[in-house]
Length: 87
Image (cartoon, rainbow, N blue to C red; front, side):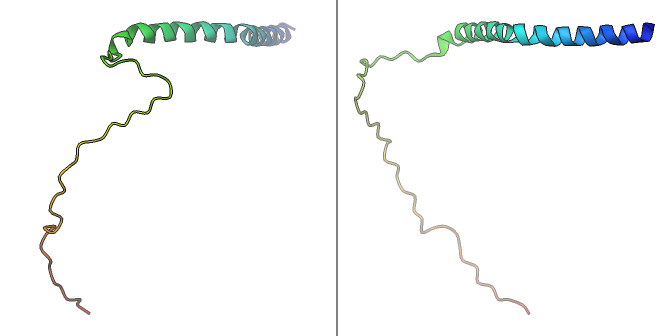
């Protein structure tokens, strides 16, 4: 009879924990996400680049051209080696 009570208590505790986890897990995860977000905001606060330019208005088109690179001489790739196939 004691074995049966032990099994019953274990099952009762298991289902009770399962129900409590479904009730409180979203709240706990939401709290952890907010704390993590605030931690990252504090940590990376100084890494944002400061813009010296005027504020861009919505809809403005900005084209940043890359500097023209000099094309390397593609004729000098290497020397050509002639070979014959051996049967």
